[in-house]
Length: 176
Ligand SMILES: Cc1cc2nc3c(=O)[nH]c(=O)nc-3n(C[C@H](O)[C@H](O)[C@H](O)COP(=O)(O)O)c2cc1C
Image (cartoon, protein in one colour):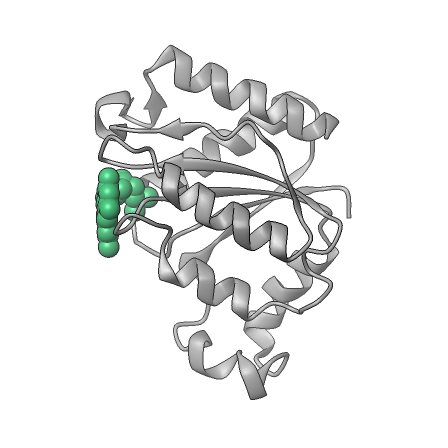
């Protein structure tokens, strides 16, 4: 599959990460890149119990996302900062995917989002370790959108630098 898969890294309703993921999707499509988006909010509510471990591959609804992740070659993860790291639901999602195979020799880009000053920097480092362990190459440009409430209003990224960083990253990911 040539589409770049964008993953909104939280299942929180009305998350800013989802809104940033949608903006990222337009940036990639403006560059002629086809995309698909996974919002963790769409996952079956009980997937942590019905789609992992001895139930791997047995939850039909979850398998749709498992297959999408298995077939994609490049990913963008839009990652909010929760308690100094990335959301637990994102790790649970990763734990439900086919291993090895989903991430081996693939490429991904990471974007951090936070209401505080860190821009999810630590969360992106934690995820980079995980993806490197799983065999994925992580693009070194990792925009950290700190103090997001001051820089995102009415569905628009108002901080020029933030938008430029996302545009630069999107172009680099296509060429990666
Ligand atoms: C469970 C939870 C924990 C959070 N922990 C942090 C944190 O450690 N640092 C921070 O800057 N913001 C924290 N936030 C705020 C998020 O960064 C903020 O909601 C931001 O908009 C990105 O998350 P969102 O995509 O869910 O909107 C937390 C939010 C939630 C729901």
